[in-house]
Length: 107
Length: 116
Image (cartoon, rainbow over all chains, first blue to last red; front, side, top):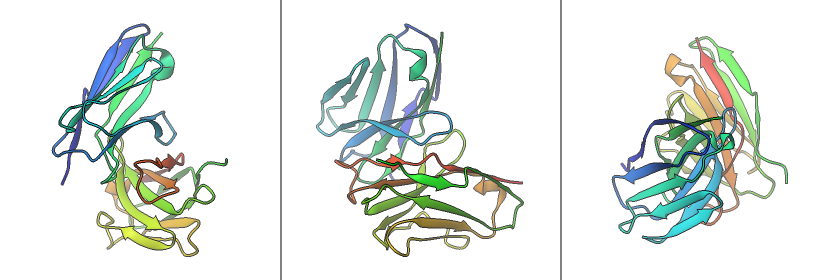
């Protein structure tokens, strides 16, 4: 059974700081999605990455897919309070979600 | 477009009671999913429907959980009898296609179940 481990589990930072969260798989991803979940809501898709080594940017968010397609990272530049939430990676083929990183950005 | 609708929003029951959750997916979405999200964890897939047929229910505890999607539109998830460890948020999601690679999951806001 594929396991998706995310790190760190919790992250508490101030506005303006940069951060990186990680997603590591016990097996190769077919393709990977990142979602953000705000309290009391369902997860919302941020990005899909498919090709090993792929880098995608979404405003201040940069997503990278590892060359071997077993890991991915999400980097946020100059975090804002609106970035607060639970960040989840997911394998698109097996519909498995990671353990999540809970981010709190303070003003 | 209207999003995925779920009800109730919250439910508190005692252990050994039964409970049912309802989901109405986005119009035209053939694929419907139920996920269980325990506090502090990522969502865990319980069951996937394609129209009114079950695609994957391998992680559904079938001794107590059941789900149906009779007309290929809305769906209900039932727990009978409930256990303390069933306390979680139950998320419904839909997508237009059976694979989410190019048709991502659209989630509802979930039903928060507390079993006392």
